[in-house]
Length: 308
Ligand code: F1P
Image (tube, rainbow, N blue to C red; front, top):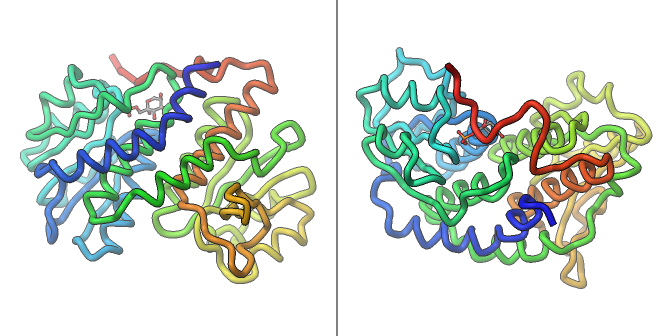
């Protein structure tokens, strides 16, 4: 078993711990504040998801930026930095450069990000051995969802299913995958595609679902997959199916497992999109294994990008 397998499997419990931590944290954004959320790679995609959720929940304007692209011309009440390692150069540079109140959500409590930020939330229980991030990212988002007032118990229950359920697609028979999302699940779709690229050097793309028909659908073909998170636009399943590509949209099946029907059939219970991301993480690892790669040690990657 690889580290990433064990880390993926531990997500339900990590999300519960993260949700409990949210209740004790006063350093996360307060209602009404103008907030920027920053990160790099996976952490940036979690920032995108949280920004969309927070603004939609009516907690205040929330923007997400790749840490190196933070617009210093804008003013925010608080900057949230998500970083598993706490050593990523662009994140540290930003934390050191701004006067704003900052909160770093960090996996490694001894890392410099926790010291540089004015506040921190430490999540060592979700830190990871694998270079490829899985549970820290989703646990950081679980923390932030819980802090917005969401009950994470149903998501954790869905995660229990997702860590065990058969994969919705046979990883050995697929040439390419495009992940789609809407609102907060756009960040999850980006993260799912990044997992495939990182863990398995597998060709994967991601788009907002409504934008997919504005060009990217040209990639769809037999032997390729379009995997949508969350709600899907009307007619999209039919448009994808007409290309010959497989359309995947997971829901909870009648027997308590996952159903990967091309659309949510009447009466089927939606799967929490973070649990759907677990299926995509497992899919990426399965492709890596099928290709004879070590998903814990992806090529050209290190645990964090530290620039000299
Ligand atoms: C961010 C990150 C990872 C990526 C790679 C390099 O790390 O970009 O998302 O998978 O390992 O680092 P961090 O700032 O969250 O530690």
